[in-house]
Length: 183
Image (cartoon, rainbow, N blue to C red; front, top):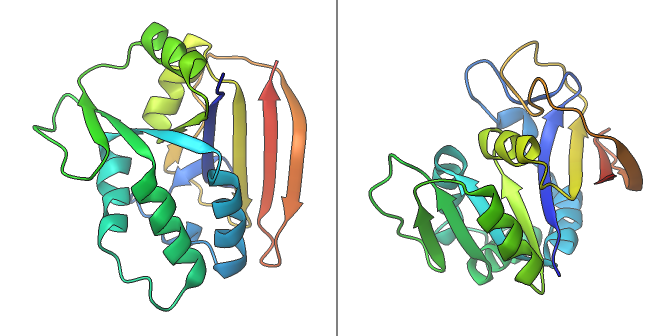
Protein backbone atom coordinates (compact mmCIF):
# COMPACT_ATOMS: atom_id res chain seq x y z
CA UNK A 1 0.00 0.00 0.00
CA UNK A 2 1.31 3.42 -0.94
CA UNK A 3 1.15 6.66 0.97
CA UNK A 4 -0.34 9.95 -0.19
CA UNK A 5 2.37 12.57 0.30
CA UNK A 6 2.11 16.34 -0.06
CA UNK A 7 5.60 17.68 -0.76
CA UNK A 8 6.72 21.18 -1.71
CA UNK A 9 9.13 24.00 -1.06
CA UNK A 10 7.66 26.67 1.17
CA UNK A 11 8.82 30.04 2.46
CA UNK A 12 9.33 30.52 6.19
CA UNK A 13 5.99 32.36 6.29
CA UNK A 14 4.15 29.48 4.60
CA UNK A 15 3.87 30.46 0.92
CA UNK A 16 4.59 28.20 -2.07
CA UNK A 17 4.96 31.12 -4.49
CA UNK A 18 5.30 34.87 -4.13
CA UNK A 19 2.57 37.47 -4.69
CA UNK A 20 3.36 37.50 -8.43
CA UNK A 21 3.24 33.69 -8.68
CA UNK A 22 7.00 33.34 -9.06
CA UNK A 23 8.95 30.33 -7.81
CA UNK A 24 12.40 31.74 -8.58
CA UNK A 25 13.28 31.85 -4.86
CA UNK A 26 12.66 28.09 -4.57
CA UNK A 27 15.08 26.69 -7.17
CA UNK A 28 17.08 23.84 -5.60
CA UNK A 29 20.85 23.72 -5.83
CA UNK A 30 22.69 20.54 -6.86
CA UNK A 31 22.86 19.22 -3.27
CA UNK A 32 19.15 19.70 -2.65
CA UNK A 33 18.24 18.30 -6.08
CA UNK A 34 20.17 15.10 -5.29
CA UNK A 35 18.32 14.81 -1.95
CA UNK A 36 14.95 15.38 -3.64
CA UNK A 37 15.79 12.74 -6.26
CA UNK A 38 16.59 10.14 -3.59
CA UNK A 39 13.22 10.79 -1.96
CA UNK A 40 11.35 10.77 -5.26
CA UNK A 41 12.69 7.34 -6.20
CA UNK A 42 9.83 5.87 -4.13
CA UNK A 43 7.12 7.85 -5.95
CA UNK A 44 5.14 5.96 -8.58
CA UNK A 45 2.55 8.60 -9.44
CA UNK A 46 2.37 12.39 -9.26
CA UNK A 47 -0.98 14.16 -8.88
CA UNK A 48 -0.95 17.69 -10.30
CA UNK A 49 -3.32 20.57 -10.73
CA UNK A 50 -3.17 22.45 -14.02
CA UNK A 51 -0.77 25.22 -12.98
CA UNK A 52 1.87 22.95 -11.49
CA UNK A 53 1.56 20.51 -14.39
CA UNK A 54 2.21 23.34 -16.84
CA UNK A 55 5.26 24.34 -14.78
CA UNK A 56 6.61 20.78 -14.52
CA UNK A 57 6.07 19.65 -18.10
CA UNK A 58 9.31 21.35 -19.14
CA UNK A 59 11.10 18.31 -17.70
CA UNK A 60 10.24 16.43 -20.89
CA UNK A 61 12.55 18.69 -22.89
CA UNK A 62 14.78 20.76 -20.57
CA UNK A 63 18.55 20.70 -21.20
CA UNK A 64 20.05 18.88 -18.22
CA UNK A 65 23.52 18.27 -19.64
CA UNK A 66 25.22 20.53 -17.07
CA UNK A 67 23.66 18.95 -13.98
CA UNK A 68 23.71 15.26 -13.05
CA UNK A 69 21.01 15.86 -10.41
CA UNK A 70 18.73 17.59 -12.92
CA UNK A 71 19.31 14.78 -15.42
CA UNK A 72 18.32 12.23 -12.78
CA UNK A 73 15.21 14.27 -11.91
CA UNK A 74 14.21 14.36 -15.58
CA UNK A 75 14.50 10.55 -15.68
CA UNK A 76 12.38 10.19 -12.53
CA UNK A 77 9.78 12.55 -14.05
CA UNK A 78 9.66 10.56 -17.29
CA UNK A 79 9.35 7.21 -15.50
CA UNK A 80 6.52 8.23 -13.16
CA UNK A 81 2.83 8.18 -13.96
CA UNK A 82 1.15 11.56 -13.77
CA UNK A 83 -2.51 12.42 -13.22
CA UNK A 84 -3.55 16.01 -13.93
CA UNK A 85 -6.77 17.34 -12.41
CA UNK A 86 -8.16 20.17 -14.51
CA UNK A 87 -11.50 21.35 -15.82
CA UNK A 88 -9.83 23.83 -18.18
CA UNK A 89 -7.24 21.74 -20.04
CA UNK A 90 -8.41 20.04 -23.22
CA UNK A 91 -5.61 17.47 -23.19
CA UNK A 92 -2.20 16.60 -21.74
CA UNK A 93 0.81 15.91 -23.93
CA UNK A 94 3.45 14.42 -21.67
CA UNK A 95 4.21 10.71 -21.52
CA UNK A 96 2.51 8.54 -18.90
CA UNK A 97 -0.02 11.31 -18.16
CA UNK A 98 -3.79 11.15 -17.85
CA UNK A 99 -6.30 13.95 -17.43
CA UNK A 100 -9.10 13.85 -14.85
CA UNK A 101 -11.78 16.53 -14.66
CA UNK A 102 -12.45 16.32 -10.91
CA UNK A 103 -10.56 15.26 -7.80
CA UNK A 104 -12.57 12.44 -6.21
CA UNK A 105 -11.06 11.89 -2.75
CA UNK A 106 -12.52 8.39 -2.39
CA UNK A 107 -11.13 7.34 -5.77
CA UNK A 108 -7.72 8.83 -4.93
CA UNK A 109 -7.64 7.04 -1.55
CA UNK A 110 -8.54 3.73 -3.25
CA UNK A 111 -5.84 4.33 -5.88
CA UNK A 112 -3.21 5.01 -3.20
CA UNK A 113 -4.23 1.95 -1.19
CA UNK A 114 -3.94 -0.24 -4.31
CA UNK A 115 -0.56 1.23 -5.29
CA UNK A 116 2.70 -0.53 -4.48
CA UNK A 117 4.50 2.85 -4.52
CA UNK A 118 3.85 6.24 -2.97
CA UNK A 119 1.73 8.92 -4.62
CA UNK A 120 2.72 12.58 -4.39
CA UNK A 121 0.32 15.52 -4.53
CA UNK A 122 1.76 18.65 -6.12
CA UNK A 123 0.31 22.14 -6.00
CA UNK A 124 -1.39 24.04 -3.18
CA UNK A 125 -4.95 23.89 -4.53
CA UNK A 126 -4.90 20.12 -4.98
CA UNK A 127 -3.09 19.71 -1.65
CA UNK A 128 -5.77 21.79 0.11
CA UNK A 129 -8.45 19.55 -1.36
CA UNK A 130 -6.61 16.43 -0.20
CA UNK A 131 -6.05 17.88 3.29
CA UNK A 132 -9.71 18.90 3.49
CA UNK A 133 -10.76 15.36 2.58
CA UNK A 134 -8.49 13.92 5.27
CA UNK A 135 -6.62 11.61 2.90
CA UNK A 136 -3.03 12.92 3.26
CA UNK A 137 -0.64 10.49 4.96
CA UNK A 138 2.51 12.60 4.99
CA UNK A 139 3.53 16.25 4.64
CA UNK A 140 7.09 16.97 3.50
CA UNK A 141 8.26 20.56 3.25
CA UNK A 142 11.50 22.17 2.21
CA UNK A 143 11.43 25.38 4.25
CA UNK A 144 13.45 27.99 2.36
CA UNK A 145 15.21 30.79 4.24
CA UNK A 146 13.03 33.52 2.77
CA UNK A 147 9.98 35.49 3.92
CA UNK A 148 7.71 36.35 0.98
CA UNK A 149 5.04 38.38 2.76
CA UNK A 150 2.31 37.09 0.44
CA UNK A 151 1.47 34.66 -2.32
CA UNK A 152 -0.29 31.31 -2.31
CA UNK A 153 -0.35 29.60 1.08
CA UNK A 154 0.49 25.92 1.35
CA UNK A 155 -1.95 25.00 4.09
CA UNK A 156 -5.67 25.63 3.85
CA UNK A 157 -7.68 27.55 6.42
CA UNK A 158 -10.14 25.64 8.57
CA UNK A 159 -8.43 22.25 8.49
CA UNK A 160 -6.63 20.91 11.54
CA UNK A 161 -4.42 17.85 11.61
CA UNK A 162 -1.82 16.64 14.08
CA UNK A 163 1.65 15.75 12.86
CA UNK A 164 4.54 13.56 13.96
CA UNK A 165 8.05 14.49 12.78
CA UNK A 166 9.60 11.48 10.99
CA UNK A 167 12.59 13.00 9.16
CA UNK A 168 14.61 16.20 8.96
CA UNK A 169 17.63 17.47 7.06
CA UNK A 170 19.47 20.80 6.89
CA UNK A 171 21.04 22.03 3.66
CA UNK A 172 24.08 24.29 3.30
CA UNK A 173 21.94 27.14 1.91
CA UNK A 174 19.80 27.21 5.07
CA UNK A 175 16.83 25.30 3.65
CA UNK A 176 15.43 22.74 6.09
CA UNK A 177 13.59 19.56 5.02
CA UNK A 178 10.89 18.44 7.44
CA UNK A 179 8.77 15.36 6.92
CA UNK A 180 5.72 14.71 9.06
CA UNK A 181 3.33 11.78 9.31
CA UNK A 182 -0.28 12.89 9.62
CA UNK A 183 -1.75 11.27 12.71
